[in-house]
Image 1: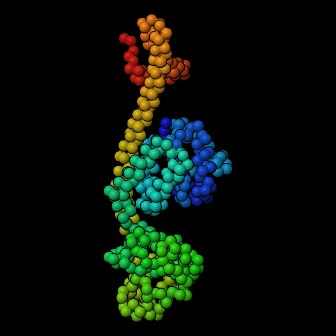
Image 2 (image 1 turned 120 degrees about the vertical axis):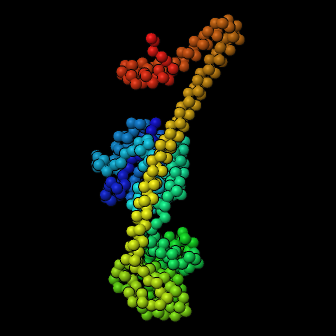
Image 3 (image 1 turned 135 degrees about the vertical axis):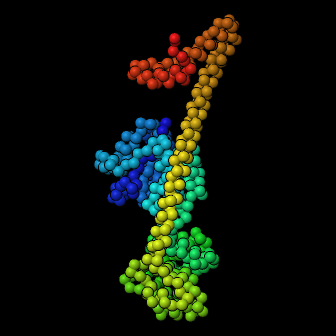
Length: 419
């Protein structure tokens, strides 16, 4: 059997193809049933995110072409529609690819940690659907351990490479006790949501979310454990924000110098950090001149992001070296486990043959047949039964002139050519 990885991602396929080949969470039971129905497939895990759709399979070594056909049939695609974009890996290459995915080396944002959780979730779904057996269970446990090792031994995820992450990284440098501070988030889009999640991971528990749509503000407030309000209410709560992060689509500033001055008076000049992530800007540039306000814009974060990317690239090189070495170790362990499984089944089969023939021999002895005859017959029948299927396989190989198989059979049985 072989470990196979098949799929497409943001590196090789445009978004319209990725959309066509995406599995909905609710449709996964049907997908697993369809996969398990293929005779070439033993075990399966399906990973489907906005940037990738990949299958990880314990399968027959000749299964790749059948799987490509299955993907087209399952998604109702035209023949070979996905083929130019598909990435195919097997055995060591497949293990190395999965390790790179788990460690964030294959992500759109290098080193991003979310993919590790997504792979773990995909594995758990495969287990719940009865599609994960001992082979993939053993493999994924090893992969998860190596991915954690990469995170521990490198700084692949330590430096900011997104605007949201850079904003929070900067806040941590300014406030050593960031977990004690209250965050005022203006807007409720993806960037502000990421800021909130990054802050939450740093121990921040106090949030105020102000947004034009109160429904979206309430949704994010529920997720972060904060309070929601509308933009017109912003001046009345501005003084409560120790850290203010703003990212709206407003064409004009929504916070002027006067509103900030009023907030500072209410704060009795306690310093306030303001990070304007919006383009066009949400906070008037004149605010930068106020005492007790630290105002940063997207341009100020650019240097942090560039430095973060460089640091992650350096860490990624070390991570790739770890993965290259560990992939070989993982495959070696998989092969060792496969050998143990084959040996176990071979011994069990031989034991079953022995038990059957012993029972037959004892019955003959009890019936009064001569012991020497019974022993001779027992030995003969054991040899005949044990060699029946191997003999058939070797005869078939000889007819096909599969001399490699025959050479392997000689090694297996410890045979030597006559001199």
